[in-house]
Length: 297
View 1 (cartoon, helix red, strand yellow):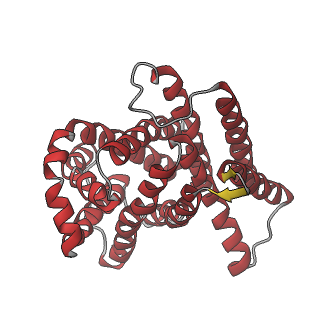
View 2 (tube, rainbow, N blue to C red):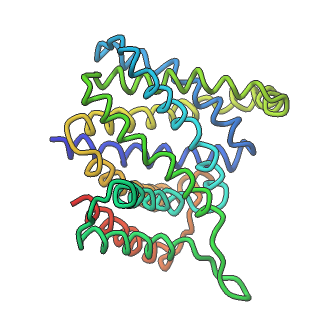
């Protein structure tokens, strides 16, 4: 049952990422500005979550966890949007796969946990797959794509999110309270963006652009919200590593959407549209997915 719930996440994340890429590449230049406007829509979606699943007031000892989750929810957005500005959407999202190796490696270095042979093979597959996606040919050799550097940062930040949510669930916090609390905390934190004068001015300048594209923002945040809730409920009833393993399918869905709807909406998708590129991505996405499942098995 949890697998079906978890599968909702990559299908919805895929749609949300396409709209994220469209907004940052066609309408906005500053990732923090688009992050500010996107976060405002939490005001709409959180009440619906509380309507279907009654929240509770968490104990004060767990408030720091909610603050950390809010910080994570906001801080990964800058490198994420920068990544989307520099590469194909599906490739950028695939780079998040590198984040799956952080937890077992940290567990080995800090806690002395011994990795299995399968986990070592999985780590190698993930690294090779991501490196193959991230290397760009130039006349004098090869360089790493800028998106790869940005997403390493974003992946490291988000790798702690699932663990913190599971911590809340293990301490009796319902899904609605955990997820809603994270989104509410991020909503409060995003208003800190108004403190720097230059960023505040950029946000004010783009209010008209936000209003013009509010239907796109709403659609993007709706699918992000649905994916986040589905992922949260899956984490509540299954191990974090397994649920996060399912989300690695997101690049496949982005590629699928691009091939199904790319000709009809050519300006919406940022993807290379040729057979060779598609085959390469499918092979590397598959290798990446196998690596993730070996780590989580």
